[in-house]
Amino acid sequence: MNKFSNTVILASSSPRRKEILDEMGVKYEVIPADIDESEIKSRLPFLLVKKLADAKAEHIACEHREDTVIAADTFVVLDGKVYGKPHDRARAFEMIKSLNGRTHIVYTGVCVTCKGQKKVFCVKSLVTFKRLTDEQIYAYIDDCKPFDKAGAYGIQDHGDLIVEGIRGSYSNVVGLPVEELLDALAAVQGQ
Image (cartoon, rainbow, N blue to C red):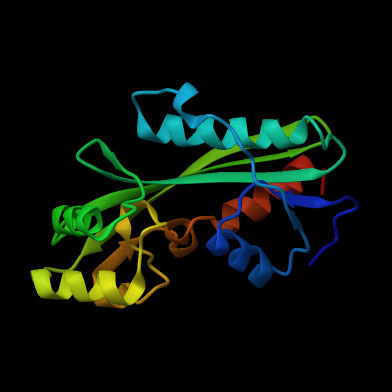
């Protein structure tokens, strides 16, 4: 699918985002954006996720103006609270336990830049968890090791064990909404 006249840069080291671009047939190189995320603020998660994606894209684009840069950030949100990456088993259990049997929001903010053109957007999906026992939660954590994933789960990593249903984009829940990304790539590249 690489009909791009320039280099495509993914400003993320996320294995899931790389897999999505691979499945799309996009040829790209990875240059993770190393920014201080604590400096970027918003009380509204859907705005914050867009600001973070924008900051990451701009950080890479300032050195790569002629290239196409794709940056993204994904949040899991329940009752206005943003769930980050758990980093250990106890925190992963707390997160999944609080999502248990409930519907939460997954926001992915994306920024695509190319030669001064820019598209920033946010996609929202709703994910409903099954009612899980503590044993099922621990089994999922031990099998899938979700310590590098927002909300302590990956829909693509045996998500069927914990997720009852999704309303919206599946690829958004994974971390990069494909349809909207294709539209943004076409827009910034003038196709």
